[in-house]
Length: 170
Length: 170
DNA sequence: CAACATACGGAACGCACGCCCCGGTTGGCA
DNA sequence: TGCCAACCGGGGCGTGCGTTCCGTATGTTG
Image 1 (cartoon, rainbow over the protein chains, first blue to last red):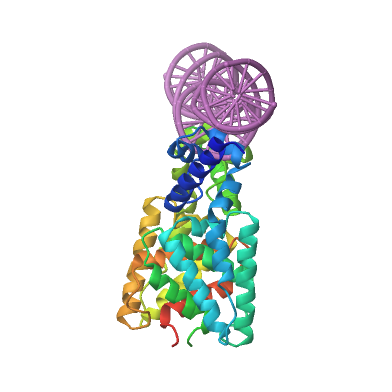
Image 2: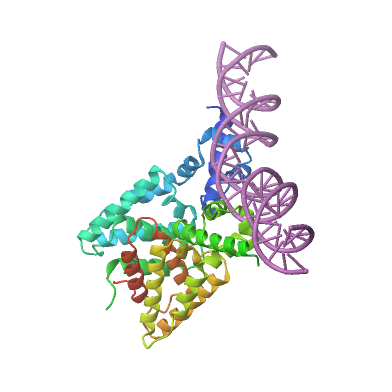
């Protein structure tokens, strides 16, 4: 690979990282190219599609988060800690809310991780048994998106966490 | 108003009602026109903008729902019943999930109604005091959208309702 | 330094959608 | 019945975006 090519690839990644974090996946690709100081064509020589660029940007953080989901003695706490981490990330950077939604292998891994944590927490009796992985993913997707619309992230998270645990009071 | 004009207006409303219910606000306006058997121009002679058409379609149901929110002795039950009604509507018709999001006077009334119910429920001690109207609206927006992505609506609603009531178990 | 592959920029394409315009048509009133 | 205003259809405009193409510039190699 030519030296300027590697340099440009890095510039694109830096710009994409910042803009995806600020505005989420919906940021126009031309804007990323402009911020990187290159043409749109250059972006496409390094990343075949916008989603590939998005995945390249989010890969490190999401993978780290998935790796951090190691089972402990308290399966319920494991799940809640993971959801809390997701909420924290999503509060700070808008791209985390999209990482759970934009189609990619990364997203599938994330869903699988959530499913595993959920299953263990349910076996341990820490979470209602009638919740499916789809339910949890949908719930998180909605919650993460809501965090960028003026709602209080901490309160939202608490509501979801407590809702996962108990059934409704009579 | 000419007779054919009134007839076409009605055809547009019928088509819009069905398509908005099926696909939500994002359905292309040309598709609505095609289903109604008229041209796009005809739609715009009766409704100045797509949002106006959406509002005309959802007006009746949303207004009825708002009107049904009369305070009883149990402020908590009032709020929960209202949220349940919203969830039911959103489960059956996709446009209800958008009515809470698409800018319109109707949406503002809906938000105001939610705020009122929330405040009363909080005074009665039936709902955590640290939740704002924005939080509730964001939560509902996320939940309603999630209902069209394969999640179990009833479970989602129960999670939210129980989350609104109690703080997290220690 | 020359020559060539590699990479660049940005104009252009294709598509989708909201919205508008205009030549033709139709309904209602005198 | 004839005329005029109201209305119709649908082609077209403007916009925004992802993606591609190509003439030009640049880094690398012998």
